[in-house]
Image 1: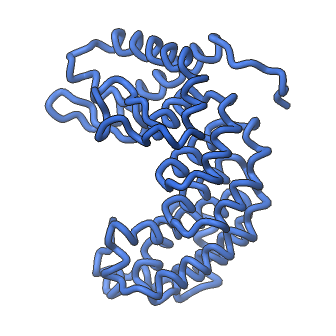
Image 2: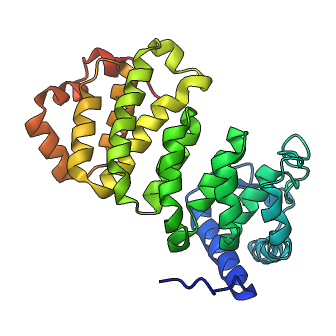
Length: 295
């Protein structure tokens, strides 16, 4: 159990900086190298892609991470207060001012706190997630809450409620992923209802329309729900997969199949036995598969 009296110290900052650097070092070996640059989008804002443009060595990048994390640490208290101050813009500039600093806007401050895993900001993150009028900031905040570990468990009920109150599928998707990170097993009934509601919303629009950027979040939400439910209740996840893989909407079918391919062999055999119609999804002449509906 964590203690409410715990303080975020320089030791925590240094530990998270080294952890971030180690994750990048592992990512670097599996990234795509183009013109001497390592391209990866899996590590958030502090991607080495920007620093490598300077021709820095691995050791220089490592030192930079530590320095950057200490800079965030020194400014973390100011950053956390900006999250609930709507007089401060979401961004100071259109995107990043430079490739190696945060721009001072509320969205990037939330990202900085996420990189640092600055758990003292949890009350402000919760407040912005629940009450801010901007969905982009709310998405950033719920994502940041998801990396705070056990200290964020007391906010799981707030996240569940925010899913019910929101109609923004991009926020709902990130909130669903956060519930998975926070091991919220009580969320399964809500996620099952959300799955059925999302399928209904998708059926209200044509498949062509569902692939547009403004609607694509609905399809991603389908996959996120199945993956998250699979973490807590495999029986419930199998039921959702059976619904998705037998749905006559190509988008629901394909995004369910993406989630299906992540399950282990036992679950796949279970589905094949109890839902024979799913087999059609793996036949080369299946018209839905031949459309190659890929993101």
